[in-house]
Length: 150
Image 1 (spheres, rainbow, N blue to C red):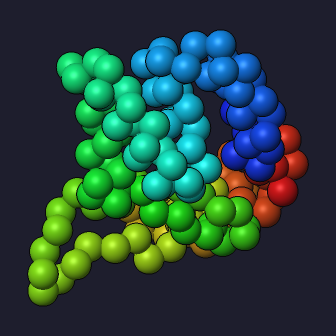
Image 2: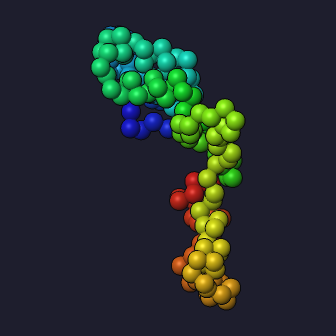
Image 3: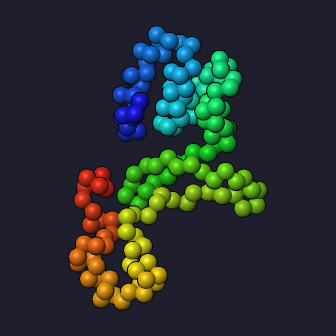
């Protein structure tokens, strides 16, 4: 299960399939299947699996927590500036007049580096340029592929 890749969920499902056939009442198998379904965005089926876990083991703490995540619609899919789809936890606050929402994905690595160095550390543009030239400061597009995955 630790090898789950959201881009290739079939691999993880293929590992769980035989286990769910061999151990159809196993709370552990159902829990992991529910977790995998939740992660892949299949919320209704994830809820069904988690309810199965809780009917067998009502005190299953992780199952209860995940069911709360499903019930409160706590996972939200957003797109990063690089075009990757990310599943992020939504705000637990529910307010009628000012609903909390995730408006976008995280900034790229180093997106705010220049403003932090200038505004918080008081560096001049020449000093900042020198740090970039030395490689001590970077912006997302300057990172190698093995780090960014782009």
